[in-house]
Length: 159
Length: 373
Image (cartoon, rainbow over all chains, first blue to last red; front, top):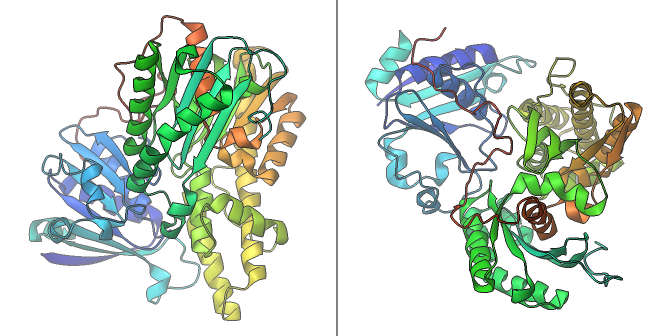
């Protein structure tokens, strides 16, 4: 596993990073999105999914109510899940995420509800509002994005 | 709720339809008659069970639905003073929603339908909200519908049973979700809607200014996810300034939040009215506001004002019919059954996602994979 820390000055930059990561992603990849409420997890996921679908206007609603939103990508499906309302890792199986684990790309918000073995294999995308780590007040859109993943993914992101 | 418990003063006209709703928080069942009487109506809410998690927990929801539903169905039959054989059709919310809960409602409804030898009608939860106004008033098609709830925020033109066209939708969070998350950020309880509304009444809506996404832009879509960040930032600024988030800060943030939501809703609504009027070619038309968010008195008043200012008549079903309930499902089942008496959706399975507008642009287009700038 390797790690890269990227500072994004605007939402557009964060979305650009998400789009780049989407183009590197492959079936079986599980991305755990972490960050506070309002940190931009859904925004990151939306840009990622739109890039993967090559459809900049694709509707990507919040999965909070439905728990899982599935998208049919050109080559493989993409699952966008929000586990905020789960309280037991067993419920992940009830959501049917298990079935397509190896064939799909998954973006999981609030991944602390995932089963332990899933977490160990997951790449992590951590979003932190930049003003919290020394930025200036008023940098509403600035984020520090820390991505932990396999060496190839991190190298590709670093290019 | 008044309709549910009052003894009908005239003999109800058949058909009778039983409706079951289990798509989210509520376990509900109701029986309605063709002449728009609610013969029986029971709702069990599981909100108390969920509040410790700050949201709906699907498996708990499913378990609660199972333990409550048989009892509820027997209860409404008894209240309506009819037997299972007197039912003419059985309807259940078949989607969209949490599959665990839906499954319980659909299985129960199908079992009752087969036991009674009557058709099963699969009802879209959104269609239930869309048609409820016609259970209460004699509203003619076409009408404009604003559906605002925990999971949905849409503007639809309704031109007949099964004929819905989506004019706009939220591109991220639903309004109810924005209320829930704001409540969570401010340490208020669940559900967030009533908690935020209660605080907002005490607050000053002009002290803080929150961003108003999409306002002034063309179209009828909504966006509310940016509000979370704004609410958090405002709360943090208060803590920095005064050392803690005081009651007046909380009330003022809630008031600003609610005003912002109202401004967004009314702005998009005005665009939709214009579109709808052009399409319908008539001047005075009904606006129906449905969904749990319509229970917010301030938002309701603002929406009503917008409707009247724009030469629309305003209709909002009573509050008890605005939140999830069995009567709206029974009524939507009734409309579908009257529209097509040979209907039977027995083969239809629960659907987590089920857009009301089948002609809407698909959520996902098949596109070729390629590099994107």
